[in-house]
Image (cartoon, rainbow, N blue to C red; front, side, top):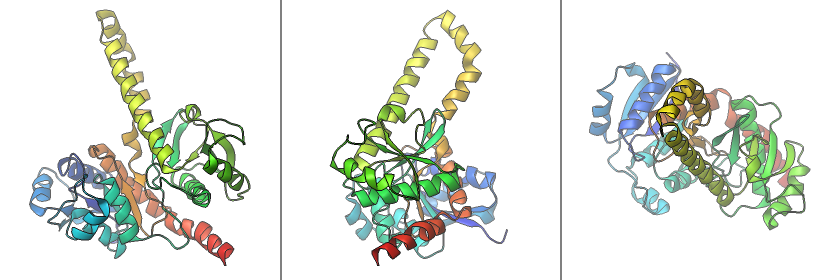
Length: 341
């Protein structure tokens, strides 16, 4: 195949690297022949994992990197000092145009810092937000921002809403996606200073379909397709989502296996239960893209297994095919620059 969508993968990043990272990369290329992965990391370790699989050699390239950025390291210092780390080398490949996208389960801080310092922001973007898809009763919603910008300004939240709308319409196929801002009540006058100042800006923004405030309890119901907030609130929402889901799953399993009667019932409902649980499995949605950069950067969970890695790689293919960056530049950056001038 002459033209691949090229994805640089931090093969050494995450709790389960390189085993699950390499496995997920191979699953992705075996599922989609349009993608080529560049596994960046310690060559011996990566090749040892690759030897376990059968795959098209044209779709895989190993790029040696002698260093690894650990989760506990200060991000800025690590990026500057470890030039031969898997994370820095993979991000540099995106910057130089060798690859279209980057995927890592490694240090979130280093990924965020490296995305901005190495790949760089699109002109006109104030701050790139981290935006994962989260499961809801109606499908999935985009939580933007969940970890990149703790101290955001109202103008940044407006940009988040615009970028989130572009992403949901083109990647998830939701026409005119509903945008809501996370608040402690539905009334317009409620909220902290940031929400109160941002609300009228979103309300009067012609580029989005703003539906007002959304309370945390309404997020799982899918009341908004794009959920706007600053990173502190977003991260709390995401972690609570994950924690409650895990606790409920444990409780359901314990109840179903508590007696012979419930075990028989569990066998009867097992197929339907599997389908429901699959819909609420965060792994199937891939990673969280860092929107507003010159190239695509995707952060997966540190504990990501092969399925999440695979879906993150395939997510990059959709992002590239739908020309999300080009749309952000055309619909958001150029307009904002015109307004400034």
